[in-house]
Image (tube, rainbow, N blue to C red; front, top):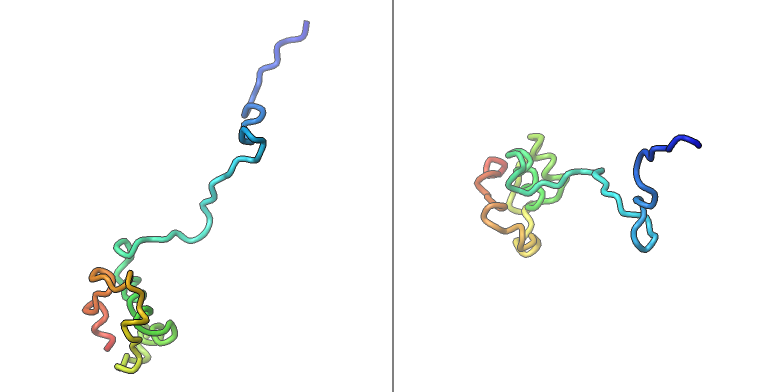
Length: 98
Protein backbone atom coordinates (compact mmCIF):
# COMPACT_ATOMS: atom_id res chain seq x y z
CA UNK A 1 0.00 0.00 0.00
CA UNK A 2 1.40 3.46 -0.91
CA UNK A 3 2.34 5.90 1.83
CA UNK A 4 -0.12 8.67 2.72
CA UNK A 5 0.65 11.95 0.87
CA UNK A 6 0.53 15.03 3.11
CA UNK A 7 -1.20 18.11 1.74
CA UNK A 8 0.97 21.23 1.54
CA UNK A 9 0.09 24.83 0.76
CA UNK A 10 -3.21 26.56 0.31
CA UNK A 11 -6.34 24.42 0.06
CA UNK A 12 -7.79 23.84 -3.38
CA UNK A 13 -10.29 26.56 -4.29
CA UNK A 14 -9.06 29.09 -1.71
CA UNK A 15 -8.19 31.64 -4.40
CA UNK A 16 -11.75 31.90 -5.77
CA UNK A 17 -14.99 33.12 -4.22
CA UNK A 18 -18.14 31.08 -3.64
CA UNK A 19 -19.40 32.16 -7.05
CA UNK A 20 -16.24 31.00 -8.81
CA UNK A 21 -14.78 34.46 -9.43
CA UNK A 22 -11.18 35.23 -8.52
CA UNK A 23 -10.79 36.86 -5.10
CA UNK A 24 -9.81 40.52 -5.00
CA UNK A 25 -6.30 41.24 -3.89
CA UNK A 26 -5.28 44.38 -2.06
CA UNK A 27 -2.66 46.47 -3.81
CA UNK A 28 -0.49 48.86 -1.86
CA UNK A 29 1.11 50.55 -4.84
CA UNK A 30 1.08 54.25 -5.61
CA UNK A 31 1.49 57.37 -3.52
CA UNK A 32 0.32 57.47 0.06
CA UNK A 33 -2.24 60.22 0.67
CA UNK A 34 -1.81 62.06 3.96
CA UNK A 35 -4.24 64.39 5.65
CA UNK A 36 -3.33 68.07 5.83
CA UNK A 37 -2.58 67.89 9.53
CA UNK A 38 0.03 65.16 8.98
CA UNK A 39 1.95 67.04 6.27
CA UNK A 40 5.26 68.70 7.03
CA UNK A 41 5.29 72.52 7.38
CA UNK A 42 7.00 72.93 4.00
CA UNK A 43 4.38 70.75 2.28
CA UNK A 44 1.61 72.74 3.97
CA UNK A 45 3.06 75.99 2.63
CA UNK A 46 3.31 74.53 -0.86
CA UNK A 47 -0.30 73.39 -0.76
CA UNK A 48 -1.60 76.75 0.48
CA UNK A 49 0.37 78.66 -2.17
CA UNK A 50 -0.92 76.37 -4.91
CA UNK A 51 -4.48 76.97 -3.73
CA UNK A 52 -3.99 80.74 -3.79
CA UNK A 53 -2.26 80.91 -7.21
CA UNK A 54 -1.30 78.66 -10.08
CA UNK A 55 1.35 75.94 -9.71
CA UNK A 56 4.03 77.71 -11.78
CA UNK A 57 3.89 80.95 -9.78
CA UNK A 58 3.85 79.03 -6.50
CA UNK A 59 6.96 77.07 -7.54
CA UNK A 60 8.78 80.30 -8.51
CA UNK A 61 7.86 81.91 -5.20
CA UNK A 62 9.02 78.91 -3.18
CA UNK A 63 12.32 78.96 -5.09
CA UNK A 64 12.75 82.64 -4.17
CA UNK A 65 12.53 83.96 -7.74
CA UNK A 66 9.44 86.13 -7.30
CA UNK A 67 7.02 87.56 -4.74
CA UNK A 68 3.23 87.52 -4.93
CA UNK A 69 1.25 90.63 -5.74
CA UNK A 70 -2.44 91.30 -5.24
CA UNK A 71 -3.15 90.50 -8.90
CA UNK A 72 -1.58 87.03 -8.58
CA UNK A 73 -4.00 85.77 -5.91
CA UNK A 74 -7.09 83.94 -7.12
CA UNK A 75 -10.45 85.24 -5.83
CA UNK A 76 -12.01 83.38 -2.88
CA UNK A 77 -14.84 82.14 -5.10
CA UNK A 78 -12.34 79.96 -7.01
CA UNK A 79 -10.98 78.30 -3.87
CA UNK A 80 -13.02 75.22 -2.83
CA UNK A 81 -15.09 75.61 0.33
CA UNK A 82 -13.48 72.53 1.85
CA UNK A 83 -10.07 74.22 1.64
CA UNK A 84 -11.18 77.50 3.24
CA UNK A 85 -11.13 75.98 6.72
CA UNK A 86 -9.11 77.86 9.36
CA UNK A 87 -6.69 74.96 9.73
CA UNK A 88 -6.09 74.69 5.99
CA UNK A 89 -5.96 78.35 5.02
CA UNK A 90 -3.71 79.77 7.68
CA UNK A 91 -2.56 82.84 5.74
CA UNK A 92 -0.01 83.72 8.41
CA UNK A 93 1.90 80.57 7.47
CA UNK A 94 2.64 82.00 3.98
CA UNK A 95 2.74 85.71 4.86
CA UNK A 96 6.47 85.96 4.12
CA UNK A 97 5.83 85.27 0.43
CA UNK A 98 3.81 88.51 -0.03
